[in-house]
Length: 253
Image (cartoon, one colour):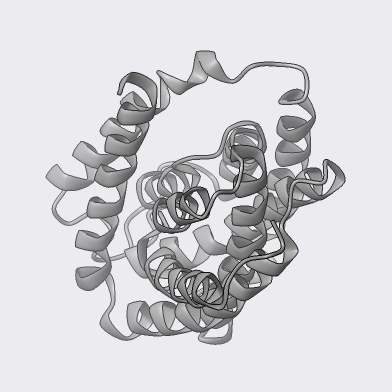
């Protein structure tokens, strides 16, 4: 698979650029990147591993941008980072011994809950709100839970993180998206290590896409920071909806 043409590499770079841009604003970059990797002929496991490689660069790029602009306080996220890491390792180990088929049918339902709750809570994320859960407890529960889920299965993790941060910690949409990028990066790295150990990463394609991801994620996160919650909200709802459609198609199509 290392004999990709120049045109293929240009397509992969452009795909990484677009995926990084969209993912930095509202998540769901994998909806753009993964089909392209499959379309150029990569087997599913290799496509998934390569997708994790290029996506990790994008989440790092956008996370650094949100942090540098003061929209994410890493010190307040340390518990979340630690528990997400532990959860992702547990999920990545578990997936080696179990078929995630049983969870495939549950995830679209949970994403629908996030979608409709956000849709009908018209002020959700526009301004900071009163937290419904103590911060440390939140990061213990959701760090372990969503970290495990991302290591075990993955699709929709960013949407779950953003929704949870909006609903339970009362963050505004911009800070919720920034914090989501940090947590996504942590669990992405764990999953990437597993794929690398398994030999399921096409480095040439992944690094070309990563170059596009870095640029796209920087641009997308900068736009999200500049335009704020009113701009991010429709992007977020659109990407959650498209993720639901994709999962339903994969499960039942």
